[in-house]
Length: 96
Image (cartoon, rainbow, N blue to C red):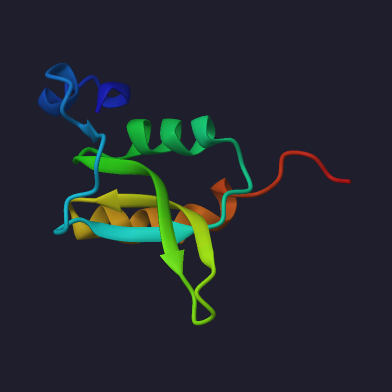
């Protein structure tokens, strides 16, 4: 990680963040409340493995399509770490 003065080879070659979600990645699905950039920046600065961050569509029992954000990680430990801090990251910036 660059904040520890270590260069991540995946980031150097531009293959750390993927445009698609491979089936072997561990997914964390959630409703987005914070800006996407704040969550993406946290992933870039605190985790080291490959990841996907984007939209996932699901069907519920009534055949309604539901849109949620998905952060998927190649390393299952990184998915666990992200899921643990998600409550602090994913909250509204302003109180109404």
